Length: 251
Ligand SMILES: [Zn+2]
Image (cartoon, rainbow, N blue to C red; front, side, top):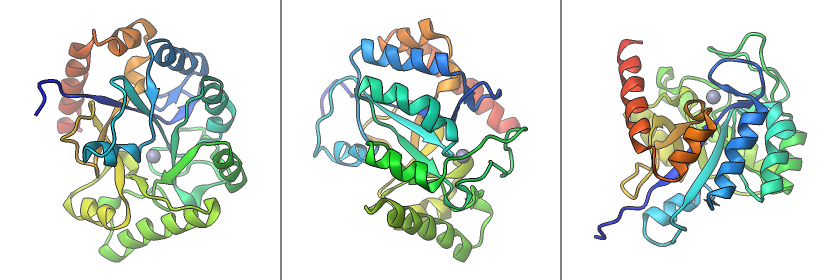
């Protein structure tokens, strides 16, 4: 075992807009966060690279990040993708496949609701290099479902995506990050890797079916984000993690 353990940062975004709340990131802040990644020399990998990397079959540059978006909001097409494309970055978007072309309407949705991309948007972006994974059929809390419904949510969302994209889909993100042992093992039956909502960095001991991510809401301060990327703000993440765990205990 080497003394140095490589860390990979998996960034989590939802909407790039002024819609408000922790899941909406203003476009100028997003652009500045991406610019900082580029200027500090980060390599942007695919989520699927993590599996091979964890097995030691793939080397990734010391500074590697993965960019993810949950929910498939229309502003990914209009506000996020142009910025990513300009910098030569890719990203993966997790889609609740039954909801495309509509507004968000699941529990916890913003008011007023934000619009989601259509299948036409998804297919055009895919041809341009964006990646897509499943976020279930209906943005359901998977821990509340019986086994059969759970499997339907996992398998049908995957096949709808595969039909639309014409390629294999192996990535998943559980709505609300809600998983338990049953859900985790069902995800593992259908997918190769799944992003979670636990706050943290990824190392080679990562559970590939609940990969921790960086909630980018915590890095709206660009000076702080740059410091973090330069390895000078690890304490900040530890403090956020502590505060987040406390919140989850008392929710
Ligand atoms: Zn979601």
